[in-house]
Amino acid sequence: MNVGFIGTGKIFDLHILGYLENNEVEIAALCDIDQNKAEMKAKKFKLRNSVNIYSDFKEMMKQENLDLIEILLPPTLNAEVTHHIARMGIKAISINPPIAPSLDKTDQIIQRCKENNIILSVYESYYFAPHIQKAKKLIETDYIGDPTSIRIKTAIGSNNGWNIQDEEKEKGFLNLLDIGWHSFALPRLFFKEKIKKVFGWSSEYKGLKVPAYVMFEFEQTEKHPVPQYGNLEFSLLPEMKLPSNYYPVDEFIEIIGTQGLMKINQGISIGNAMTDSDVFAPLIIVRDGKVESYNEFPKDLKYSFIKATEHFINTAKGKKRPLLDGETAKSILKFNLAAIQSSQKEKEIYL
Image (cartoon, helix red, strand yellow):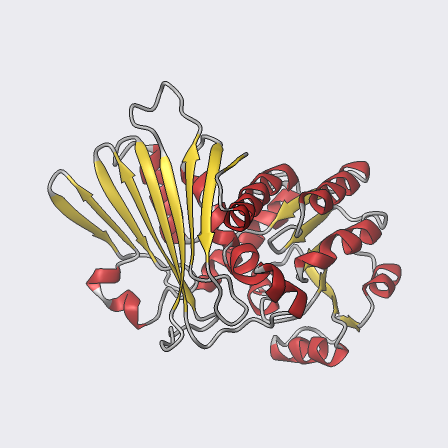
């Protein structure tokens, strides 16, 4: 199979890793509106000379025989690009999240892929982080009992790595729909119930809607003895640099169960100096009066990307199903947008 990339920005450096040692997929083409950037990335990762470079994705699709497409663009462009490439005989499309800035645009992407029998997978690297996968398995075996609440804190350091477009600043787009996507996506990994209602608050600092706080309630079912709730917190540290090989952001997750509690430390910046401290062990469980620390994991964000790409390739081959298909990604976006709407209207929003 041949893969082509549309967009070669900073996130490309992580998405490419899963293909470099994969003998089943050839990296055939790179496309970026800044062709020099794409050429630099080809050199950086020592891609073979036959990799073709384009500045126009339509021209790339016309010239290349591609099976897989990785879309690594601002979400405002995803629907337009998908509309065009879906007619070109592609087997599978991977979209870097968020899938789109609106539910209407998301529906357009989903419909276009269905009409052309294309597998649609929305990329979520956090689902494949080794310590997060371990936490998921422990929860599935009732290791801390029935989960009752989840809290996710996202800390945003001062040396931000995102280019913020003016229209996105106005909408608070960056932290709640981009940086924040992972936080909105993670609850469904651990809790199977749908989210019933959302309440959000936010302030603003230099174009970012931070600090921001989101509280939500899951649909209640008889099998859960304790009602299930969650909250997301987005905090800015404008005078503190978070050491990271990738983005100056980190996440901290706490899940409470009927028999214990679990702390999942670090997402984007795992592997920095904090990781070496016992306080920030990747996974900590308190149960039966004892504290258990889990440290034996690969400690670098790149490993979750490599695993996520491997899953996408297996999805294209029919061996796996997407963990985030279009409809599932739409439900996460709906949750995300409800939090923004709640903050704007200062009232709870039912999903």
